[in-house]
Image (cartoon, rainbow, N blue to C red; front, side, top):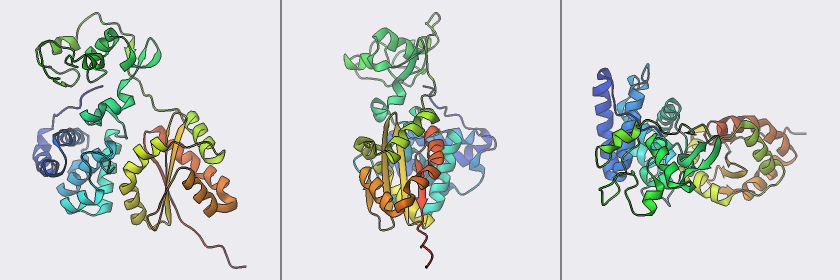
Length: 337
């Protein structure tokens, strides 16, 4: 897991400072220091793009978009999370419209490859709950390194593949794997921890090369099979996945529905064989999982299967890139007989 760099090109330093000053103030007032650090890292990464998107648009728009983008990754809009806020709160604070905020947020997420559960953009307090952080290949086999021997965990940490050694956290030692600290230092991989040994560990020679990270997004074939079972063949839908992912993005989805003027919006997420489904109508009613499927079947009546097959390739493409699959729905009155 590579830690994002803080480097900013000299030509963009003033622009970065102006935007970061605004996001710092918001994070100090409404969020926390972890959000402030991640937003700064994201802005720095965006400044290094060629050409940098920061060269166009207002500072306030990028400030709002950056906070919103990191919020999307970390479920900021889910009221069950701490901290949390609404997308409208971000827009009001920075004085930008919903469309502008969403546009800059999407531009940042696309440019930096941000998706929900992206390990490098996950808050430190959420790392334990993020399965993508801990999935590694050991001798070609995909494993959750948290359940591997301590030696394997230490090698993975030394290679910068995981943020800390989970086995040491469990036994009360410093998770960074270094001696001499009474509290976890939570040093990022590849950076010095509470003593100078961390830098040496990251480049120690002779470490077995059999542990590696890969892209563990599901294949399009796997995603399509899961969606077909859930949407067309009546398979059970995941309440936990709906609660954790879709309801966490509900504010953003409702804002998108209002902006586009659709009659309803449908959102789908998949994790292995598990699928969750959310439908929001113009009145703001949320239909979850089986209720969403039944509501859409009723609205589309005899055309449900055909319409699902039409949007399925779009959903598969989005989910294969680590994005939510979202589609707006408009009702067209039947022609008079």
